[in-house]
Length: 303
Image (cartoon, rainbow, N blue to C red; front, side, top):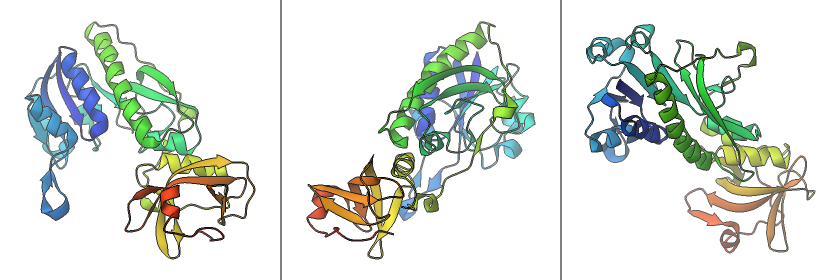
């Protein structure tokens, strides 16, 4: 098969490798335009970097649905594959390849359509998530499902760690999907629309910790927002990121810190959080024992 791959961030790298390693011809890779970063240095997307290393043709559009129809049509691809591309494809784009367009998505659809499905699965305390390979439709993440695979979420797993695992799973599952499509054995199953769950994009403000909530709920939020945008509170007017914590049944006053037997605990609406790793505004990441060498926390109220 002739394939055009659409992707941008790290999460899409294993899926791009899967397309190449499956023996199909990747005729082009479409990714987001180069951006200026710190000190006006122009950087490539992770997918562009890998595509160039693999000697693949790279196409970049500010608006692919407006700019790319003619060029993509001229490639005579059999199949389009998308993974965390970052732009919505128009029906004209979706209609180009005769075998359609498939997408690698980081959840068990129809749950968590939209942005940040990996983070929201952890934030909401889910025990299981997975990868879905589906046919791309105009309505976001609503297409028929080709194949799915589930995986348990670790009790201490962060979004970053789960992100890495699901990226690998996505590549493995995509190889299976490509084999089904190329052999003519692909069977697509409509999603159960009544079970659809939509999730929104996350922002920095989502990380503000409300200690009136339960410790388990806050632990899920902290893990779901690690490494970005990070959970945080305020310590004497400065932002204190909580990078790692552990919920426990210890009672305490919400937001108040107690230091006891070498442990640092913050009271919550139910239970407490034991702080394990933090980062104060303008400082470095530190485990709590090192942080305590320069800061007195016992009796302090956070927030």
